[in-house]
Every structure is written in C-alpha cells, then in structure tokens.
Image (cartoon, rainbow, N blue to C red; front, side, top):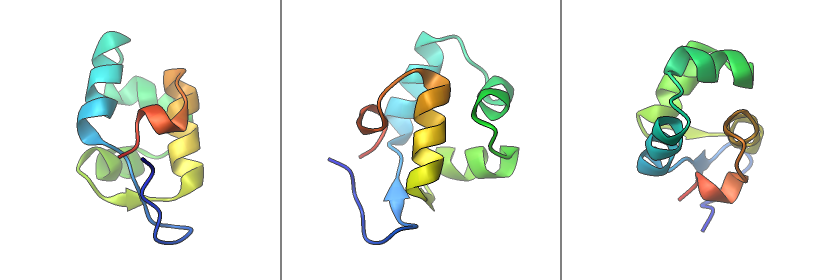
Length: 72
C-alpha cells in the first residue's frame, strides 16, 4: 500500500527498488539518467528517505513498473 502523509511524504520500498534494479541489471547511474532525478535524490530514496509522488512516478517510469510496485 502507498504510504501518504502529505504531498511530499511517500516512501519507496528499498527492497522492491533494489530487486527491480537487479532484475533489470540497472546501476544507480543508469537510474539517475533514465529518471532525470539527481544522484542525491536517488541516493536519498534508496536509503529510505521520503519523497514526492512525482519522484516515485519518475523512478517507476524509469524502471518500467507501476508506482505501486516500488512503494511500501
């Protein structure tokens, strides 16, 4: 289920994100490039920080999955 406490308060499931990246043989740099997000943002999300819906959508699109597939 997507955890939402406000517009800027979503959390990506770190394990789901990592497994999806592994399945695609995608490195962080490739995710940064495909998503258009900064390396800092991607690193923050990977370490469990909250992010915006827009960030989740960009990550999901870059990974070719639905946002629900990478969120908690």
